[in-house]
Length: 315
Image (cartoon, rainbow, N blue to C red; front, side):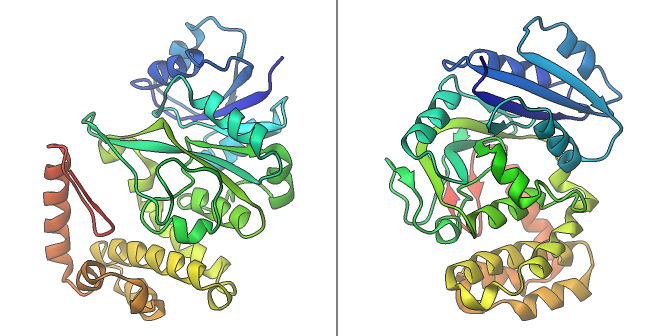
């Protein structure tokens, strides 16, 4: 009998979906169901899935309505009370569901369960994450989700598990947002519920060419909606204000690169510069032509397993 429902939104991931599914089927914790929502794929993804014979897999096909709709639809079909999310091009270590379930067993009343994860750019080496004020052996409740997430985010879409009732109470993923919808949900949960975290890295965030990732698309302008949705929280919670200012910084840089100087200036004027480090302050005032050059250099370095970031430097 399934204890955890795994929701996988799928849109044209024929190059990745088999490996992703195999990483699920090889889990040490086997009491799960896999619900795949084919969000209007036009490639061979569905054929590849149908070639995998496992009764725990259920495939639904919908018109292309975006990842938020696909996830919400999949959650509505879930037969369990625990929902684990996985994108169709990411990978789990064999102990991932066991890691999440152990976290849930020890802390059963949380609104969000998250595990540590590695970032892997261009199939290079695995890069460690960094969380503010969180020990390397942490296993339990995160005291301040927003403070902990000012370098890397405690919650990431392929490394979380959420009780189904939380989705119902908060309305699930915002289907009006085509980008930033994950951050939006993590914020809504963390403002009201406890978050449990395991520092054991059991999931892998695979980051390849931009064409494979929605987050690199023109839809990223939807992230502007985050700041309007939570504008009333900023002044009452200092760690949340800093967290949101770092998000403003990130989106402002994107808007400047895109030539959208109206939104760039609007975001910049909302930032408390005390919440940014020196590198971020300099970047925010750097001409867009030089930022584009820096982005190109960053990409080249990533291909050589060097991670250069305004938040953290890893090698």
